[in-house]
Every structure is written in structure tokens, then in C-alpha cells.
Image (cartoon, rainbow, N blue to C red; front, top):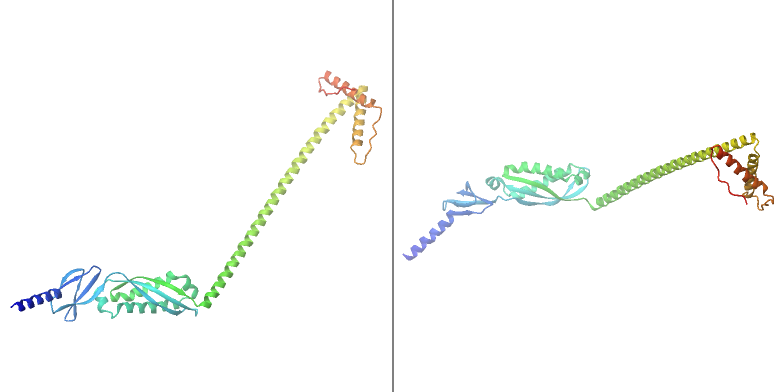
Length: 312
């Protein structure tokens, strides 16, 4: 009796473990009855009929990353590049992912490899190297449409690496260097052009300012000469009036002024090294006296007076 009780207890435990299934979060199990799919076990506790039902496939419902192996692809312009990629997938229908395809991961990898060859092979090398986003978008569209029947959603397809051959890489490096040198020369030429323009503008402005300065100086000189001529004309007119009246002092002043001017020109001449001063300075004294007399007459007439130094 004791052995029978132990046997019954063991059978009860076996039946309990075989009928009670706990599904973890992020996974789904398929239940099969005599090998045929009947239902899907979702996260939590589920019960099966002992010896009749069993767990078929354990499917992960979380996002999964698949590596696409590296492969050599010939582009449209007959250049060979090495390409590899990564694919992000998520199972959204566990029964389809379990029973519609034999090996889901291998099927998606092969599908990505074949479509990568198709997409990259339809583009030139320059387009392949510069339009990764376009390649990713086309691969995502094609692969996602193909995996819908497998209950799987392709979230992203990313090209990891695009490697041209070594000789092609060297040629591209030389081409890039030549292009950069050409741009540098263009920029240098544009800089020289701008500098020449600025120098020309500076010279132009300097010439304009110099011309304006010369014009202003000439205007000032002309104005000074005009005023000097007016003053001399007034003095000559005054002397002429005094001479017409028979004033001897005016005559002395006029002759003495010319005498002083001539003597001053003789003294400042570059050709004259020796100046002989005349002993008779009565002419100079007569000049001073005449100027004093004219000054006195001008004061009586209410005209301007001129300061006359005393004679010695």
C-alpha cells in the first residue's frame, strides 16, 4: 500500500508538471494536440491536457538583431564592393513564424543577402558610396514585404560597411586629393583677386584724396594771392593818390619799398655768395619816414594805420 501511494503521488506530480505551463514575458508557446497546432500560450500560466497536448515551438516576441554575412557585390559600373548589414526583426504572429518557414533566421539572412545584391547591383559605385539611406530604405521595403507571410516584421535594415577594392580606394584617394588641391587653388586665386581689387580701390581713394588736397591747396594759394594782390593794389592806389597830390613822402616810400625788395631778392639769390651792403642807408631812412607820414595821413583820414618802427 505504501508503494502504491508513492506511485500515485509521483504520477500526480508528473501529470501536474505536464499539464501546467508557465510562459515568461516576451515569449509565446504554441500548443499541439497529437502534433497539430491548436492554440497559442501567452505569458503567464496555462494548462494542457496531459498525454494529449504538448508545447510545440517556443517563440521570442522581442526585437532581434540578425547579422547579414559579408559578401562581394558587383555594381552597375562593374566595380566590386564588399557589403555586410544588420537586420532588426520582431515576430508578431507566433504560429506563422513557427509553421510557415523552417528556419526563420536563416531565411531572413538569405533574403537580405539576395536583395542586397539586387539593390547594390542596380546602382553605380558613386551612388552606392553616397546613398546608404536609399539602399537601407529599398532593402527594408523589399524584405519587410517578403517576411509578412512569416508573421515577422522587419523594423530596420542597416548597411554596416561598404568596402571597395584597395586599388579603387587608392584611386579615389588620389581623385579626392586632386579635387581638394583644385579647390584650394581656386580659393587662393579668388583671394588674390579680392586683394588686388581692394588694393586698387585703396589706390583710387588715395589718389582722389590727394587730388582733393591739391585742389584745396591750390584754392587756398589762389585766395591768398588774390588777397595779396588786393592789398598791393590798395597800397599802390594809396601811393598813387599821394603822388598825384604831390606828396614827397609817398614817392620816397614807393622807391624805398622797391629798393628793399630788390635788395632782399639779391640777398636770397642762390647765385649770390657775397652781398655788399651800401654805406648810404639814407634811402632806407627815407622809406621809414615816408611810411610814417603816410600812416599819419591815413590816421587823419580815418583809414587803417600801419605800425612803423623808429629809425635809428
